[in-house]
Length: 118
Length: 107
Image (cartoon, rainbow over all chains, first blue to last red):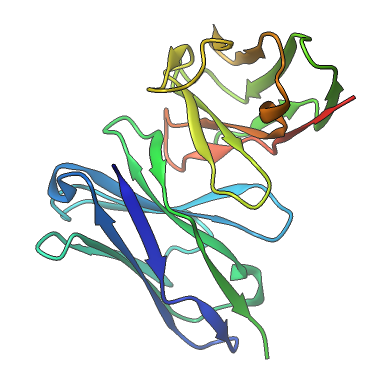
């Protein structure tokens, strides 16, 4: 069974940093592209970033480009999202998701809440 | 960026009814479209990919169709467990974008 478990969320002040983790199990992590998708409270979904199975290719949404960094450790089957210069508009539930080579997300984690507030 | 316009924003239907949700892209996305279901308090789940392919384990009452810029999700014989929000997503081009969602409730 595919499992994705996020951690590292919480309350952080504007301008500060936070790092999210996603522990994967139930599949060969190093064979799959991975992504982060977020959802602001009572809002829709927003793709944040993606990384290729080997880690060499990354893509970012316009709203986080230059501030967030996606990375992975295939030996630990873990995905990361380093979030710097956080803003109030980054407040959201962040989901880790496995995605196909094409770009749809076939499995999602349960999500982790990030609140940016002073 | 490709804009995804989803309609209606909310929908009320009766058990057993057939429901259709529409998604329009701002340009041709060549069937690079997925549909997700999100139940209250839960994470999204993939229903349909490549516009009309059913994801593993998804009931056959769900189906997707469309081409070019116009796509739709149909739910036949609505069940109580289908109460959820539904989102479309294009993955034809970066940045990948989602529709605003459709909240489906029981009448």
